[in-house]
Image (cartoon, rainbow, N blue to C red; front, side, top):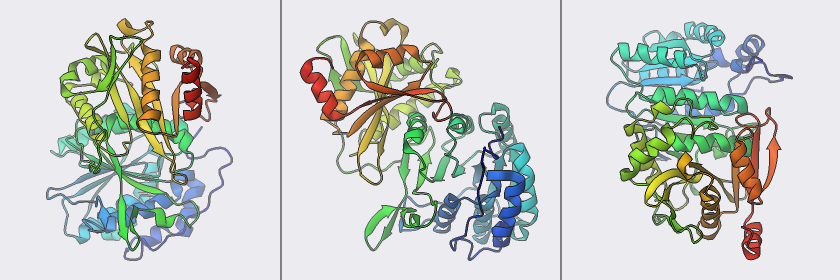
Length: 458
């Protein structure tokens, strides 16, 4: 199925919200242009509302009212936009940079090969960008050759990716794994590129798995704006209009961790098992790099991980960056993830914790998604179940979370059987609804866990 023409597609042009007011490119993205483009290119022919939020973000460059602002480095930027569609975000960023006298900046717009015709056509209409360095090139998510071609062209010119832009790309569950693979490919060889993502939350349950996996590789922080009522998430003021993004988020690359630390920090984690005295779950340190690399780098361990397509890419530098992000996350008052190592008899034999902790926007309730990955030598000894018990105890007793989930591929039978044996309630998610295909999601509430512990069945 063509991802740009899903079944029962019925979309209409979006209405600009003033973001184009100071732009000379606006006519190319108006209702008439979108109507024609939608007929020919489907979803890619519409300007989605998250783009308007990004344009506002880029307009307030180095602004004191945004935290963090979109900072312009002294050196030339190389910006890659994924899923560029009509090209409005990239074109208007290029126009903004030209107005600031930054002719050396390069904007690379990517999308499916068949959508590149739309991008090229719209680029020809942008008279204000005649002197800009704007390139259109194909990049289908998950296509390693496309990503390599993009990187090769950049390196050939003596450049490196400095920024990646994603506007409303988190939607179809089946496309999220390929999207993450492309992000990993593009950031694997570039020094500290910054990823800026704006998207509309459509189904947090379906999107959680993506952010769970994303958090293994990237640190991230929301963008806040200062107004009369104080600091709020940037983009929340758009919630009154139809279908706006509820968050504009800025993400750091695998080798850069710059999330701001909140005043109250969590103490380093050390969870000891009374059932297995040799077992400990603790905060990882840089001394664990070799052991953690061995865990992730073993294909037998990542067989059921939909994101890790190439375990060989877990280089020393990448694992060091991961551990530094884990440590930094645990310094936050309300961390977005808690990743820990599983230690048996003093040796690291796995990783676990909660790869993503989400906060419901309306209720403020927090849900952590737990999991564990063990080396073969540590399996079938009860350590996996005990690691999940210790993690759940920590989630409810220390972090005061409102719910803990455990999500996995349906074909991951060992983990599915483990959760059922532990007494967790689960449901099978059909392939068309799951983040990575057919999945199991198990759920535990604090009152249920308390009853199980009281009965001795936890």
